[in-house]
Every structure is written in structure tokens, then in C-alpha cells.
Amino acid sequence: MATSTPAQRNPFIVGSWVRGEDFFGRSTIMRDVLEGERHSIWVLGARRLGKTSLLKEIEHRVQRSRETPFVALYWDLQGSGDARGLGETLLSSIEDSETFRRSTDVTVDELESLPIAEMLANLVRRTVRSGWRLLLLVDEAEELLVVGRSDPATLARMRRVLSRGGDVRSVVTATRLLARLDDEVPLATSPFLHGFIPPVYLTPLAADECRALLARGSFAPDEVETIIERTACHPFLVQLLASRLFENRDLAATLEQLAADEMVANFFSVDFQTLAEEERALLTEVAREGTRSRRELASGTGQGEEALEVPLYGLTMLGYLTRDGDSYRLTSWLFERWLRRRL
Ligand SMILES: Nc1ncnc2c1ncn2[C@@H]1O[C@H](COP(=O)(O)OP(=O)(O)OP(=O)(O)O)[C@@H](O)[C@H]1O
Ligand SMILES: [Mg+2]
Image (cartoon, rainbow, N blue to C red; front, side, top):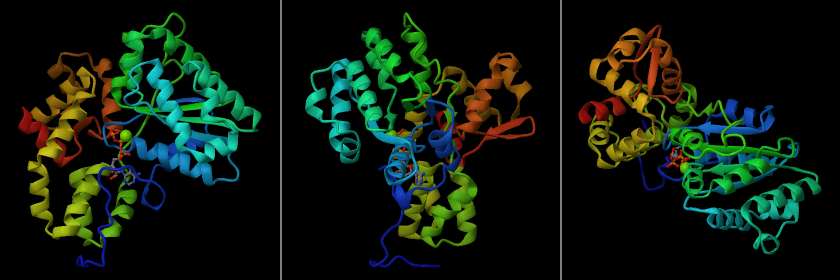
């Protein structure tokens, strides 16, 4: 087993997004985005499951590819607040991406005075004129709820530009919260998410992808398997646990520390709040009762079995539940500890 000397930098990254050689897995979803048929894609992922990293990695690969028809633009909506704020965050995305400006000949000055929907239409036009298609990578799309509540007309205009297909492919990432958009912000035209649903689920890493990431720490094979089991391959939890283990080399103590850690508890709590009420009720029932069949969950939550199909599928894809035959259990030991304590 390796020991950490000053020469051996901790290879795990906790908190900030990753790309390039630090990015693991996600090949199916990357293929769907870059080579698939859909022009509007909502990547639904829980908190810290790697939504920003996915978009940053897509941007990175498009920038380095010689074959892609796309020019990519990463747009973080967080903090936009209203139509004017959306314009500002979009302009700073353009400012930040020299590659985008070089490929399309777009300058910030010529867009500055335009309303957001026209700004977008302009970007699409300029991209197409330069011989490309626009791949718009929209992060923190829950912000559309904030904008739409006070200004549905702006959302309707943006929708018209973004759903034009062909010339523009829009990939938005958000938690389950975004599902509220069509209920809370009804548009006179089509619902905003029409075309973006059903969502593509961002799952935890696969076990072999997780092992590839953990190989950076030169841990013992049984330690690797324990990390996989306790974190359920949630990339943030894997990196956090591995990073601490790399420093102190005591897995049992590190696991106990994480299970009692305020920051981790806070993360679970914020994450849990993004889920729909019926999803939270299902997880609570499984935490309380242990492994449950669909029938037992239906009677425990007072729902019909049919009605549980969609939320159970979503919770399984997002990595909260594992299905064994007709039974469901909580996947991650760390999450289970948190949820049990909360009850
Ligand atoms: N593909 C990946 N390979 C390795 N580690 C990853 C990957 N994706 C995410 N991570 C880990 O998870 C952490 C969170 O990633 P990221 O910021 O991309 O998630 P997010 O879903 O955008 O989070 P938030 O909900 O806070 O916006 C990163 O710091 C990194 O440790
Ligand atoms: Mg993010």
C-alpha cells in the first residue's frame, strides 16, 4: 500500500467540477448528446452527481474534436434572476470562451443591447453562418423557474429559439426541481419542457468507472470494494471519502467521520429537498422499513402500484434505490445512515 509523502499529491478532487483526465465514465450520455437524434435534452441529476462536470467535459471534447459539427457554449444560469440577468450570464459565457468567439466571429459588443431571446437567435444565426451548429450547454436550469415566475413571456420567446432543432442543440442540466416549471409557469404556447422530457438520467458511476477513479489512490482491493459499497459510486462521495482516506489511511475511522460530518449531512439535506414529494415519501418508507416490494411501498405510502412505477424508476436511475427482483433498498450506506437519523 502506498503512503502519502509530500511528493505524492492527493489525486482526488472534492467540490470543483472536473474534466479531461480527471473525468471518469459517462460515455453513453456523451454519445447521446454528441451523436444522438434529440435536439433538446434535459439531463436530470441529483446534487453533486456531476452535472457541471458533464457539461464542461462535453465542451472540452467538442473543442478538441476535428469531426464534430458543433461549436459548444457553456452557459451557467445561476443567479440570473430575470431576463436582463440571463443576458448578462450569457454574455459572460461568451466572454469566457475564446474558442466560441473565434469559431463564430461573435463579439460581446454587438449582442449587448439585445433582449435575451434575440441574443440567442443571433448566436444561432452566426454559428450557422460560420458553418457550425450551436451546442448550448445550460447549467443550473432551475433558474428558469425564478425567471419564469415573474416573466413567462421571456421563457416562451427563449423556448421558440431553443426548440428550433437542427441548427441548435440544447442540453440543460438540473435536479428534479425543474419538473415544476411547466406547472408553475404555464406558457400560452407549448410547455417549456415539451421536447426536453422524458429526461435523460445522470446516474452514479458504474463500478468499473469507480474502480478506475480509485486506482489513483493505490488503495487495497478490499478498501476499494468497501468504498464502492458505502458510497454507491456517487462521484462526489467517492472523491470525498477517497481524498480523506488518502490522507489518513484508516477506512473505518474515515467512514465514521463522514457519517457524522455536518457538511455531508447538509449536502444530503439539500439534495433530498430537490426531490418530488412522492419520491421523498418512498425513500422515507424504505429507510423506515428496510427492503420493500412495490406492493408494500404502495400500501405504505397510500399510492397505487401503477403510480409508483415512474418515481421508483427515477429513484433507481438517480442512484437512491437499488432494485433486486421486485424489491427496493437504499443503495448508499452513507445516505441510509443520514435518512435514518433524520427520522
Ligand atoms: N465524471 C466524474 N469523474 C470524477 N469525479 C466526478 C465526476 N463528476 C463529478 N465528480 C465529482 O463530484 C463533484 C461534484 O461534481 P459537479 O460539480 O460536476 O456536480 P454538480 O452536479 O454540478 O453539483 P451541484 O449540484 O453542486 O451543481 C466533483 O468535485 C468531483 O469530485
Ligand atoms: Mg453544478
